[in-house]
Image 1 (cartoon, rainbow, N blue to C red):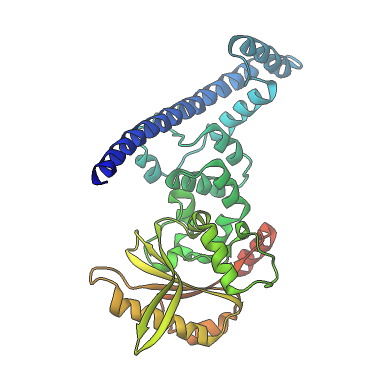
Image 2: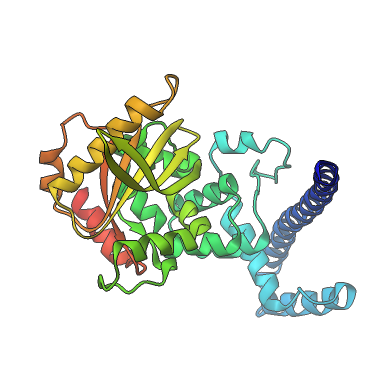
Length: 347
């Protein structure tokens, strides 16, 4: 049996190597096309400028080029696609990304203005539709850092991740969002308010139990981890500990590799009460004193609730609190207009 396990490990390791090679090759091809489309867009723009005094020249040029390239290379060079390449060049010809992020991808080439591209063409088609430059940079950086698929990029945009982090982050870190993405240095940096859990498929009204909510999260654990952010690893659900002969259970336990600490979640479908905060404080104290290693950082507790009174939260917790957080969750996608109003009020 042991020999079979060794063989299986060997076979799987070789398979993993080939899968990674295929992925790397696909990534290289996708990036090569992105850089090529930038150059195509540049040449289209320059040629249009040369003939701008001729009526209808741009329209004629695109049609002629589309016919020529389609004969040479087949599909992918419709007039619409060529317009997108031109728009790609116009969007990014004077655009720069944060130097720190650019340095992380030092193996990539640069275009004429020193700009690097990290994502697939489909990603950039989505990004180009974001008018706010800072917001567009944020989603590009986060997609590159977290290896988001196009589907995940669309979900994060639809869930207004940028606005939610703006609401939650320290004011002195707002400018970093468009330069480095979300920077996690302390406990509060990783907490969102609200969390958006539309992928659970639960109704907006609390017609479900806390057990239902927990089970749905486990069923969609991979998506929930993406919603939590960078560096989270799942430890367990209903994790039991015993203190003074009394048994307690933490709904969800995670570990964050960036902050090197346990992160405990307690789920509440109703309004948050001060007793809930006291319970989480006890959970956090237990993990700090009985579970975490000496070189690990203090435990973080997050209470996910449907509703909360911020005044009660602030009065219950100490002024220098950095371990217990209460965040609302939504089971439907938030309105960007609603979040913008909250941002305006906060400013």
